[in-house]
Amino acid sequence: MGRARKEQSSPPRATLLDVARRAGVSRTTASFVISGRTDMRISTEAQERVLHAVRELDYRPNLMARSLRTKHTRTIGLVSDTIATEPYAGEMIRGSLATALLSEHLLFVGETEGDATVEKRLVQDMLDRGVVGFLYASMYTRETRLPPALRGLPLVLLNCVTPDRKVPAVLPDERAAGRTAARILLAAGHRNRIWLVGESPAGVYAGRERRLGIEDVLGRAQLSLAGTVDCLWWPEPSYAAVREFLVGGPPPSAIVCLNDRVAFGAYQALAEVGLTIPDDVSLLSFDDSDLASWLRPQLTSIAIPHFELGRRAVELLLSGPPAQGIHRVAMPLRERSSVGPPVVAAVTG
Image (cartoon, rainbow, N blue to C red):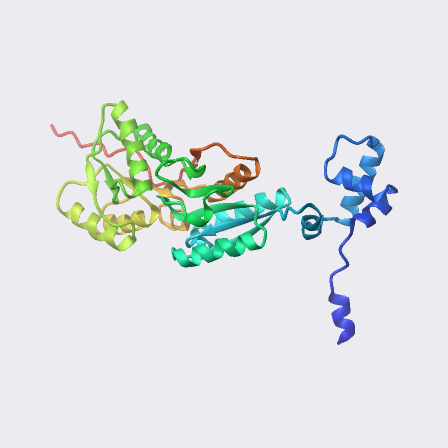
């Protein structure tokens, strides 16, 4: 039993001294090469030997030991409401983590579920462990007030923004995504009877921005939305609202749903009244969740770039004092088969 455990144990981790010995240089020289120091007179041949030894030995620097020497822990804290337990936005954490590791930083992740007391304690615990900067993240794009515990600390907001816009924030470019949606419909030939489904009051940041982008492009073409079918951003309310709308009047030419869950409900309502996508009605959406590719026909959707949001936020935090204001990340279009040309009315003699 003891032998089996011994055989399965991992090989010892290579040290800086191992690298130096393999390369035939001093430990100090190996350290300078690995850290990228260019102010030392180290021959090109010696540098190549060190880097070759690093690859051979799969050497990774010991961040904890380095932090004890430099008094810099190279750790970042990510404080969120619910994104750590929501698979939909988990890519934000993955993007943050991957980028932190590329810069030889660790990422501590803590979730508060919106509880101010938990949030305060979490921030203080991270500070006690030597965290050098923070990402403050939100599951849904929204305006937020900065927690007192984070004021004055190196900080980047992720998927949220303060009302005064003074704290650097990384957000998806929702308004540009709305413009993309409108351009897709115009390119397919839709001009009239374009309806928006979902709620977009001022307090719903993503809905408001998406609508403004749609209206901007339509307005430039001297067109406008035919109207809005108001409903919560979930399948059941969407199904009920769209079903009632379809029964009460002529069908739309195209529907823009404010997220994929809304689109799911709209799909069901259209099918129940005998309308097919995209032959009778074109439909597109936002978020590009798993639902988008599973629906039939597959749903054209404009993606939230979760991974890229996390990556950009860490880059800003580690690049020095980041510029104030909003740093927007483009939302990529995922074109599928739910958008087609408008139905041409039959001409009678």
